[in-house]
View (cartoon, helix red, strand yellow):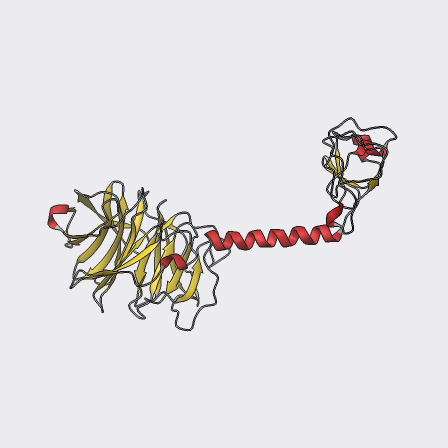
Length: 365
């Protein structure tokens, strides 16, 4: 059996339906009709008696599609596509469907996508593209944060399971592993200078301040100082990234979702404030953060929306860099980006992901 879709209203007689109407002029629904209705006999399928005919195309909708019709009858007129045959076509129907599809796409972008914005002249990464092939960090299946150390010219990648820091070069080669003991669910890392780092522990909403010597292979929690923030979090919804503003001596930390939150901690006083409403940025979540010391701008990473948002410390949006196929010279979507850092000397941005992926973005040449 084949259903014939007919977007043009048809006037039919001898409708036999659930309510028993018959021999009265009938306005059939615009969406479909039963092919058996072309025969001089009642249709033995479920139909609904129409409403009285009124003026206007929209008001002449009444019946419903018959569930079946014969293939032979479907071939009596129109174009057959697979198991569907189209008898007539109304351009107004196509226009309505296209407008509805456009509206749905716009709603999806607003809910889960990054805001599209032309780069502001103050932006330093608005024109960045992928400038190196996709690399992998060996055995870093849970990489969740990354920090650039300008003193060594290397990158420090933190992973949450097992708790570990890996020092790597720009090609992703592992230089050493640093075991973290007494720590759990590590999600962010930032460099403070002189071998000192900030680590973010998501499950306890704690920031740990540690020193990593050039020959260190392990760090114990007892050798750190810490700041614990009083915040209500759900499962896997706590700290996801941390950044350090060396000039103003601030620590920035982002909470992933419900709600997305950015916090600023004053190192000298321990005072904590919220510099702006992160929920106002249309990203699915916040999975990482770093600060560009050249401008003081923040780079906020979103795993769900696969993008980097550059904004001022007051939340003014400056640029968006996408990490998806077709953008930023990406050949494929970046799967689960989690950590972000920047080399201020070159302007290169480094992004790592949970599935050991590692990308470098830089200015267009």
